[in-house]
Image (cartoon, rainbow, N blue to C red):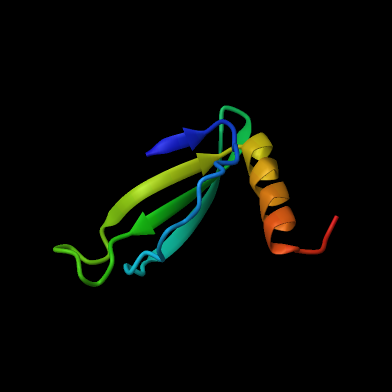
Length: 80
């Protein structure tokens, strides 16, 4: 569980596609005057406890904007 304060590019290559598939859910909330989005991954069907909360990442407006710019650039998404 972590709060993402900044996103930086890592120039290494992805060597394989992970075989595990799971569900990622998100929550939007406000804490201390900050709007947050939290991404929650849940255990795959193959885990001892399928669907159990596994990892969470929290983004505020600044880190979410950085992620948005990365996604636009890397996948060619059109938008603002």
